Length: 262
Image (cartoon, rainbow, N blue to C red):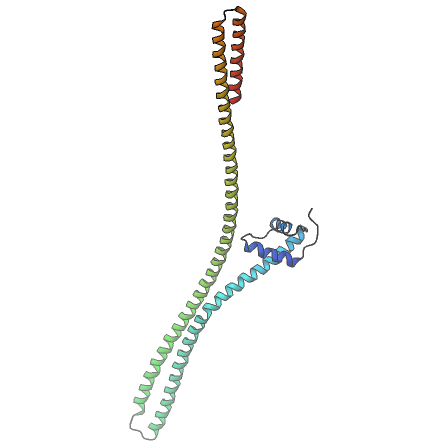
């Protein structure tokens, strides 16, 4: 007889993990069977329900942690891409500042009587600055494109994580169904084997009865032949009447034996 006792929340949560490892999603009936088979203990459905709710929260946290581990694999590549773009922009800005410093130096040299004219120097520097501004604009556009691409990649990454979670849940459900179907198939195969065994026993009984019928028929026929021989040698009317009655009795017994065999 099953003994009644309280089951702690921690024991129920451990049982939930054990059932999940066996490809069974935890619920109240399965947990009840689990503890009955383990040690015969019972508890209320409310206790089971609260513990299952706590376990589901733990399960969700573990799943999210696994997804975060996957995110940590991709994020270094995104960060490196951002660092490369920032480094290129900083390098270009430094070059621009250096060119401006050169421009100021050349202006000072021109003031002190250098051979190059101030107008030519200014035009040259203006062309250089314009070219650098175009390069900065191009790099800014590339940075914008890179940021948009990173956003798209992050969106695809989140969609992929969601899809993986759905597929994993479906896979666990399919595994549970396959296991249950396998158990049902095994039970049906066992039932079929039992039916085949019964049919074999019935066939053996039928064969045995037929052999007995054949043997009894043979013996009765021999007795009939013997009676006819005795009758032919004795013409007494009483003997003949007795012989007829005996034959009728033999025929009746034959019919009875045949009916039993059927």
